[in-house]
Length: 505
Image (cartoon, rainbow, N blue to C red; front, side, top):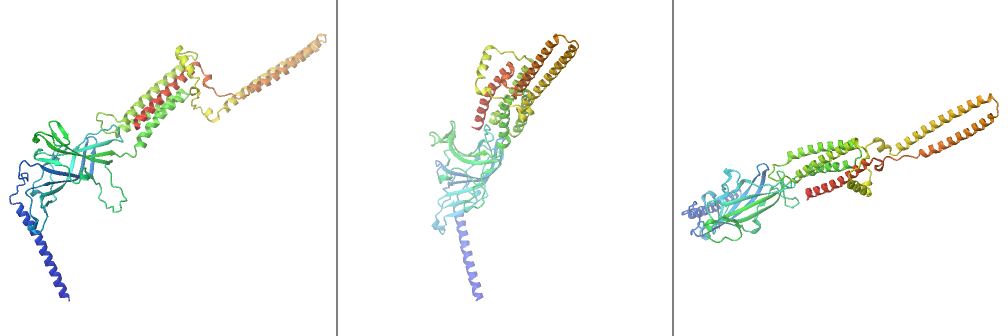
């Protein structure tokens, strides 16, 4: 029984080897037959007037580097092409119905592809080698190979860090003109644009999204353009009229990349908006010394943020990014605010408070102070006013009233002692005038009591809590400058809103 099994296995092995040899022999026979008169150095057409239609397809597998300084892109992938070779044709019925064979790509003719926007001299020529070409019995050839393209780009950083960059990949046949080779559209039509497949991880359920982020960029889209390059430039559309030997068929593949900056809002945008808000708040601080100090710190903070931004910004290509323009405008506005507050502080300290501005400006400020916006009090950094509020004014008023009351009492006591001494002196000489003096003293004492009652009433009146000083209690010059600061604040607010709108949109 075991011997029978061994014989069956050996018989099957012989049959399989026979079929394999037969299949190999068929490929060899076909290859020997079609390569008898084949010359890979010439176009595989039987008539020189025939224009070969070559279909080209790209698949991008990896983006290695986006060099913003050099404005170049390094990417890897596969390039595939197909065309009809009139000399690679056979009758399948003569070769055991063999319709397709694999031939080393270096043995057959290939188009002379060149990368026109290559950033390296050794990457100019494209060779589809390493993978055998597939040949169909009707002469259709499919060839492919891997590539590493180092292409030049034109970057625009105006929208940094939300900028979108596009890099073209320009391919053409550098040997044959349009009358000999035309790079036509591939079939089917959904393969016209390059396919981007940055990951080959199996995902049978389709739950994971394809990989799009690489090298700090997000792949958004690809494109493909076909044009005919000649004396009039690159003409798209139908084949141009006239002599075709003055045109070359050119394919432009491209990839669209968007910068991936998830921390931009926290590291750049938030400090920029914070410094703008501080610049606006300074106009509401009543203490000029505090306002000047905060403005100086704000200038230092803006300078640090600008220096940090300059280290991150890519090299300029003629246009400053909008975030850079925003930092520049805010720095100028803050410096101008510092100058305004310094000048106003000088006026408050060195100019008399009753001085008036020119007549027209004074009228404008007086009319503006009737508006509710110009009546709002500013911010105070006095710890007593902030923490205790009106209690300080009430306490001061009470202490003042108490001092007045004590001074009145001492005056009354002195008057009473003087009257008593006078009465003692007059008692030694009892005359008729003694009664009059006594009546007069009694009248004075009554007046003293009345004065004391009046002082007590005045003290009660003075003990009403005092309110903190307001703009209306300040000098005329302070009122004028207060109104001007509010006007400048409104102007600054409009400017910052415009800058933020231009920054975000």
